[in-house]
Image (cartoon, rainbow, N blue to C red; front, side, top):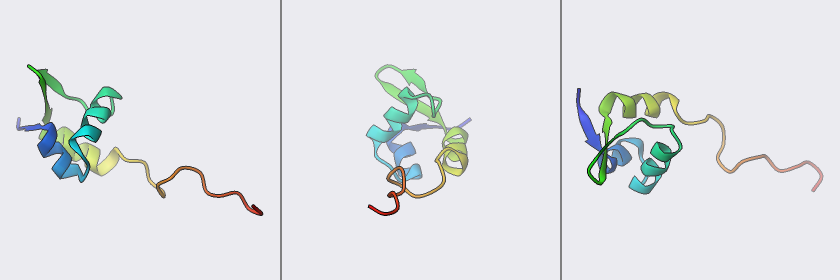
Length: 67
């Protein structure tokens, strides 16, 4: 079992460390709290990278027609 920090997870996922902490808080990433830091299993980060994000364009709903 290989553990990574939130900073390392952020680099793997291409997001900020703040975003990784948000994902942990929302329950979308599983992490273990050690002291003040979170540690994540590398395989969990890789799983999220493959399957965790929603597909489709960013930014929510598409614009309504005729406006």
